[in-house]
Image (cartoon, rainbow, N blue to C red; front, side, top):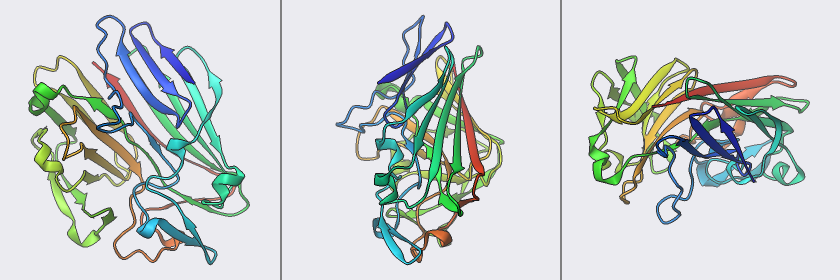
Amino acid sequence: MTVTLDNGRLVVTISEHGAELTSVQNKETGFEYIWEGDPTIWGRHAPNLFPIVGRLKGDRYKYRDKTYFMTQHGFARDDDFKIVEKTDTTVRLRLVDTEETRSIYPFHFQFDVVFRLTEQDTLGVVYAVTNTDTHDIFCSFGGHPAFNVPLESFGDYYINVDPRRKYPTAKLVGPYLDNNLEGVFDANQPLRLDRDDYREDAKILRTEGNPITFVLSKKAQSHGVTMHVQDAKFVGIWTPYAKDAPFVCIEPWWGIADTVDADGNIKHKYAINHVAPAQTYTGSYTLTFF
């Protein structure tokens, strides 16, 4: 099942499966901003990552002396959410724990994803994790939206970052984070899209909870997307290196993959978020389409 939001100029489509944004289309021109999800290249559009971001060492972790198994990016992207609020321009989708989720993630939780489309052609996305358990829960979450970049002009697209400065970067070795290999991303100049830059996976900026804005467009700016991230810990930029994929992802993350030296205890996981009973932990970003 899908749900649509409409402000008269844009039509936004969201699937209840994974609470995934699947389409943002300009009603007048028909221009589609979101990747179509061709499974021969990458079969997703904009998955929501929860309760982990990235990969656990050996796809496993320990909690209270018990070992649990969980695959990359967690289970929320493959579960069905329920719509709990809906207007013409707003929808709140919710995932709660079940016996099945507790077999791999032994916590009671409520995970809401809220979409709000404004008259300024801005789509706000809010993540809210509420602890419905009697003790702390440990989680990460994030977005993974893929934006269409026409194949014939891929190298003509740029990403501008504001504030313009040098950002520390996180480095993955295989699927795991190595904090000894930190680098630098120089945002004083626009980043021109080049597939060779993603030979070793994503570029990951350490944004450390500070506001940051990304503008994806050609220099002529005929069409593009502005992403403003309010408080994420990291933002990844990614496109599949081995395939001529006509899209690029800009991914705000409130968490990251296990480090190469992780001990497997979820309480010790690098950049994990601790949420106390009855408390809600939130993160947000906006997308403005032009």
